[in-house]
Amino acid sequence: MGSTVHATGATGILSWEAGPSTYVLCNISVDITVTSPEEPEAYHLLATGLSIGGDCP
Image (cartoon, rainbow, N blue to C red; front, side, top):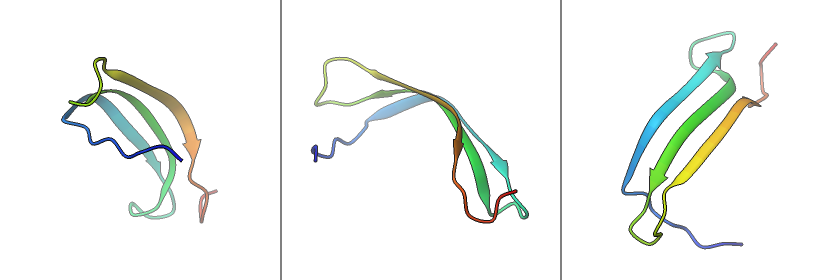
């Protein structure tokens, strides 16, 4: 297991597809750049259509 690093800033888009109700997340997509004081470079997080599961069709 790695250590936890806390972000000091982030920019980008986090979007999701709602399931049967607006409170159930089915799929999440992220395109975010994160910065941290412990790391010299920013990290780019990019993923689309991550399935959350649960009560989703």
